[in-house]
Length: 184
Image 1 (cartoon, rainbow, N blue to C red):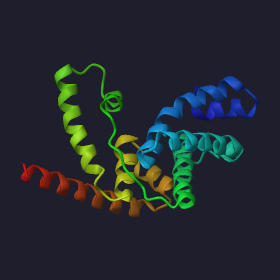
Image 2 (cartoon, helix red, strand yellow; image 1 turned 90 degrees about the horizontal axis):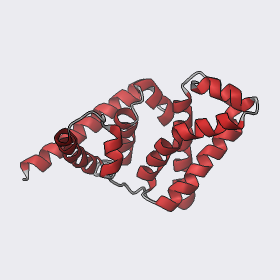
Image 3 (spheres, rainbow, N blue to C red; image 1 turned 60 degrees about the horizontal axis):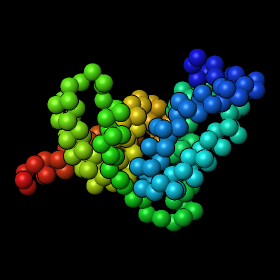
């Protein structure tokens, strides 16, 4: 059953559909929030806020975008509100190896997985050194695999602004990687 069908079932009162929709997105939303907050405890609280707001606003979901885009926009807004309320500076965190293995194909050889993880860990550490708006656009585009249009909707920007931001973020990332390589 796709997300739109599940939403119809939820609005009709199906409790199993609620659980299924939650299970589809809870890990990815948790990961996104954790990368933004670097706090397990805060991430758990914010995750609850995301699903509470999602449930409360579900009747207003019009289906103009995918549900995934819609819920990530809610998650982004919850994180923004968190920093506004807490007046905290955003801290970044590198994703651990187990999380990264989840993104890889299961049919890869152990050597391929190892080499990919070594390179991916270096890239993620370098991304952590970039400004937060660069980190966000790179995460949404290349880890969550959102389109330019979906990323623009989540970030509240135009598609041209996201393309420009992505270009600058990738350029900054490659410059940082090249600095790291030349300093070895």
